[in-house]
Image 1 (cartoon, one colour):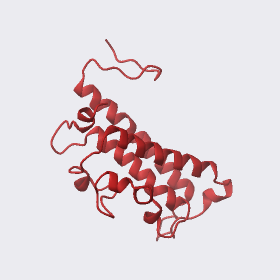
Image 2: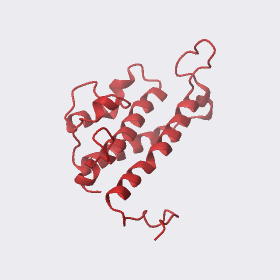
Image 3: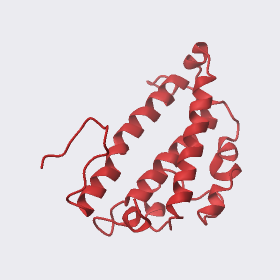
Length: 162
């Protein structure tokens, strides 16, 4: 997608594809250090340590991955920078998951609260997968709204009706 396609919004308050992709990367970036047991997890995020916050022109600590009100006015960097952040967070997550021992999956990330069980490494990983699956189709949907003749990528196993 071009920079203009990534920034296109179906409505003024709606998300654009660039922000949806940023949100996916940012959420994954925030979760991986936490899974690794980092005390100050935000300080271990690539957003801070990899210089991505500066490339996106944002001050320290903002915006958080789920803060929609802060994301809407967030200026997007070039598609190359956005893809770079996505690639970096994905590579880090894969490397981390490949290094996990099965016994670590039951480790609690935070204490249990009354009536609820503790959030474990396995539960956080499951959330990351379902969260990504929830959002992955949204950029395709926005692309289809912009270009009615656009079709899903070859090899996806799906074809839009002609």
